[in-house]
Length: 390
Ligand code: FAS
Ligand code: PHB
Image (cartoon, rainbow, N blue to C red; front, side):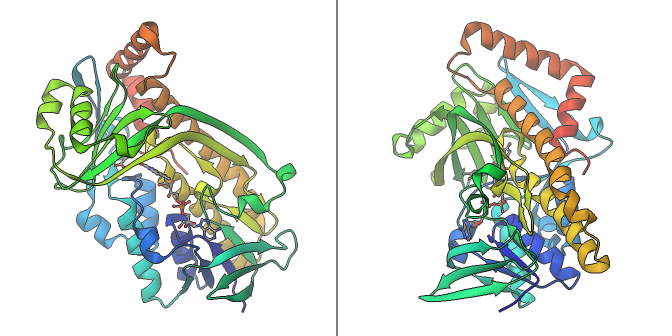
């Protein structure tokens, strides 16, 4: 079998790249190790930068997003028993974010790909990229006990942090940067109306909390929890009590509790693998970088990687130009590191670390107080949160 671009991974980055390439007549095959339902069952990101929305519009998959997504022009920071709103739109000439779950983005992209009759091999086992340092790369995989080979021009490693693509690169060719945070996020989904009409990021002596949502009737909440904590240790009652203890009284009083239908703990880390290109293999999205979700950047960074790689592949196929693919790693990493910094900064400002102590808590509160009363500081937060220019 032969195609132009083999995409490993049917998450948002693989699907979005496949859809954009299809739009310019470039053939792709996606190889995904999980089932379609398993991919759709993952609950992850919830906030889309304006640039990501524009990319989904370009891919022709933004209709439901515009019908059901919630445009947000501000967020609130909660500390010292009060809410402090950051007016994102006023500080960034009208830019905003859209609340629309990653699950929905993935669903829309999968439906669009299926409608176009494009090939995605789900439950593909032992996917392996080969000869990507030559001009004739190929991928192999096993399906239903049969081994397959697909020859191609390029391989896009869109297979996430635990994928095979980055692991197929010789360790000597990779520079890894990593910081593990000494806590995780316990997240729940519940069919209850959100506590506030916008997101609330709370700094509290007991730990960080986040009030988010998926719609006006479905809420997404998080509380910081100890590293190694277990979901089984958290009943719904315990979660709701802890969440409300970390919020200002007025916000806590607005929390509508109910039974959670999803509850999980995610570890927090900052991770970057450099470079993001190895001959005919490109690392995209979580395959190359991970950020703590405090800045709502993970999914949006995957989208910006896709934008840069798509532009490079479009120039290659349209004009036989290598300039775009040669510049991919350096351009993508320049934006990745700014998002890694912002996510690290939001995380250190809002979370309780083992060594924070009373002095550290006062420093965090002083930074937050300065932030919400300084137009310059609020603008810096706002322009990073809505998404820096590509
Ligand atoms: P994904 O990991 O989404 O997709 C990779 C795909 O490749 C998967 O379908 C996987 O099954 C497949 N794959 C893996 N190995 C393979 C192999 N060997 N062969 C074939 N296929 C393979 N971001 C935010 O912005 N906000 C959040 O709140 C947020 N919360 C998160 C919570 C969790 C628990 C996690 C893990 C991530 C979270 N993220 C969040 C980040 C997340 O949204 C990612 O940035 C986003 O999924 C990146 O998309 P992809 O790069 O497509 O990677
Ligand atoms: C979410 O709704 O899942 C979400 C929103 C904002 C974040 C992280 C997660 O910073």
